[in-house]
Image 1 (cartoon, rainbow, N blue to C red):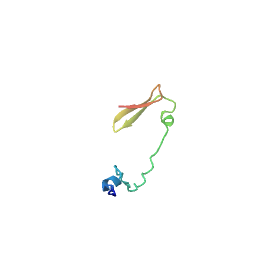
Image 2 (cartoon, helix red, strand yellow; image 1 turned 90 degrees about the horizontal axis):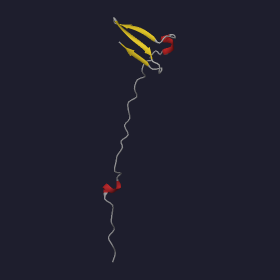
Image 3 (cartoon, helix red, strand yellow; image 1 turned 180 degrees about the vertical axis):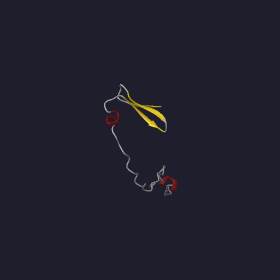
Image 4 (cartoon, rainbow, N blue to C red; image 1 turned 30 degrees about the vertical axis):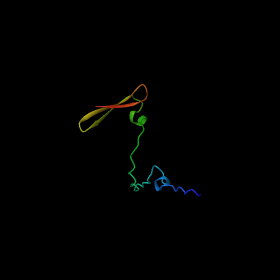
Length: 71
């Protein structure tokens, strides 16, 4: 007496999660952004006033060496 073979179901052969590979189109190179150090901007001071379209903005260096920009 032979036992019938138990075949796996097709769903048992597939992994549970299907991660699809998505390729992003290559982005165009962004134009170079001008960089300047905070030391060069502040020139040894702890505050700098920046004027923009008639408004004044204050760039301050905190005691913890963080920069804060306020209007």
